[in-house]
Amino acid sequence: MLPNESVRYTRVHSVIFEPDVLPDDRCSGLESAGEGMCNCSCVLGIVVLGINRPQSKNAISKNLVTMMSEALESLKKDNEVRTVVLCSMVPGIFCAGADLKERAKMQQSEVGPFVTKARTLITELGTLPMPTIAAIDGAALGGGLEMALACDIRVAASSAKMGLVETKLAIIPGAGGTQRLPRTVGVSVAKELIFAARVLSGDEAKSLGLVNHAVEQNKTGDAAYLRALDLAREFIPQGPIAIRMAKLAINQGIEVDLKTGLAIEEACYAQVIPTKDRLEGLQAFKEKRPPRYKGE
Image (tube, rainbow, N blue to C red; front, side):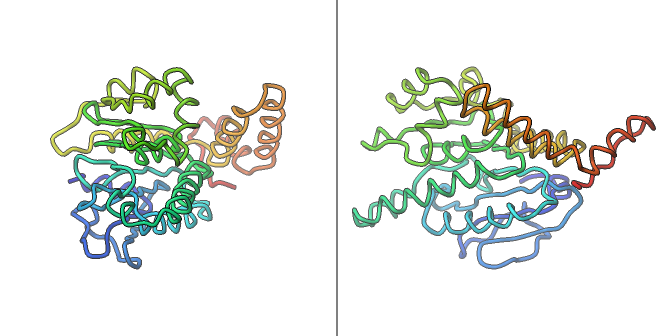
């Protein structure tokens, strides 16, 4: 169970779970917001997006893709959201990847379109305008790791297990793994990991640069989540428009040559010049006080 403080510090706590499964105490005090979703208005612009399919180890199903897509669409439009933390509500698991029981029942003609939808979902996660942090407190396999790779920052428990294991099933990562993993750990390392379907510990992932932080798991099984919240709180005092523009400049610039990247940076910088936040930052510096940014 996560401490009550973690809920208090979230502006919105969105939980994705099976309709017939009640969320655990992490959702205490949350108001129902439709099938499979809960929301709670709190004090900071940190959104915790939690997956809760305990009977399926958070496997990615058609229903999960639909619910997550709806949640991400809502987040895109909310300028008050400063950071999104993606986590699991199921102890010991982040996401086991594709729902293989559901996949086995699909016609061959259904598989491709479903994988496309899953890839689109994870792309939407990767293109959210605000920072995203994946808190990996348990196994993140296949599509589960692809989901984490789409986040800006990854925090894992040292004991967590993760890997792109699709080649064991005679398929390949189909939701961005073949593209995001080499961009994260390098081409040669990514090939080795995917060819061998290797599963890494949190510590091993940290040594390869796959995760930003590896933390020792605690008794409540939420050490990575708590560290992710700490990181999110570090982002909160900074200018929200500036952070969004910095993310955009990095994400777009890394895909092009340096000259084009510098032009992208210039364009993003131009977006922050006319903001009230920029003037507030200068005034706060002059008055030797913390700035009060409003995202304007």
